[in-house]
Length: 303
Ligand code: UDP
Ligand code: MG
Image (cartoon, rainbow, N blue to C red; front, side, top):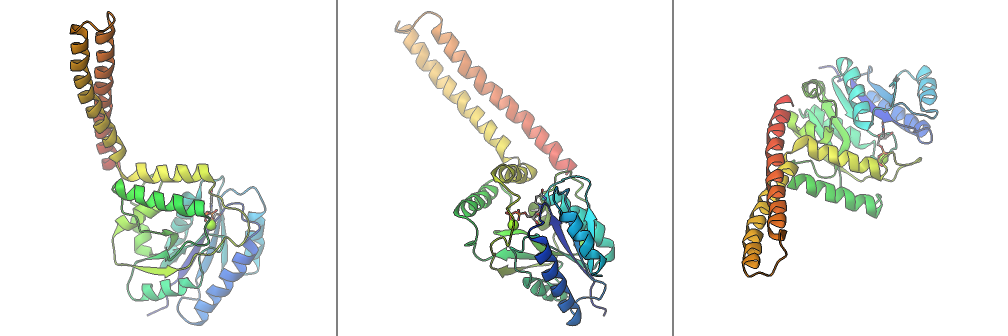
């Protein structure tokens, strides 16, 4: 059997500080994999410039001119990490047997990719890179990430704990990904839905080699909201629940207010006013929740 053609897909957004080193290391590593006959001579590293404002594209372009395993893809604007990744996967899938996605900042140990390939040779179609510990991340990043995984679990989506976007996918798995024609893809949640035989590989995550994180707090929040709303209708169920609670509270208050009224301890008009505010509020929440349930159904269908 011929060695599989591998494409390593690397999304890059304003990564000029770290890119030269990343390119050098990935190129060396791929060459080594080829020499060891683990992957085909036709294998490539594909860098995706996600609409960077700095010299990222120039660096990719120049390097690709004198390194035959290096390729570049330039997006017309900043489409975001997940979309850049997808663009790379979909562009390279036709000419590859398996694809690995990895960040540009060398936080993920590139040598672990060798284990990915081994697992692929054992018949796994998806191999997840899982962080053993996150000592290198700041306390803030670590705790928010942990809270995120917990919240996702409560909301009913089972993510692979401590797995980010460092993974191998077979050609078949990436083709399956195409069936999810969503505009905003949360890959970590979708990839496990594909099925197929899969494996985990554990590694230590390092600190970013150079440059700054492209996920400041506002992007991180948006990203997790995306993850939650992409996969669950639990938030809307909570609204229904609160609606019912408010409704019952309003009934109880109603009785209480009436008793106050009949013992003559209230102002004129106060009882009816306050009771109707609670009652209408509760009914409205229930109604919104019900509408949400229907929208949730439509959403699942269209997914
Ligand atoms: N990235 C991207 N587009 C964006 C933001 C980030 O392609 O809009 C890339 C970035 O260049 C890096 C990867 O996504 O290769 C992960 O970003 P980063 O390392 O900053 O995230 P962190 O590791 O801090 O979560
Ligand atoms: Mg990073």
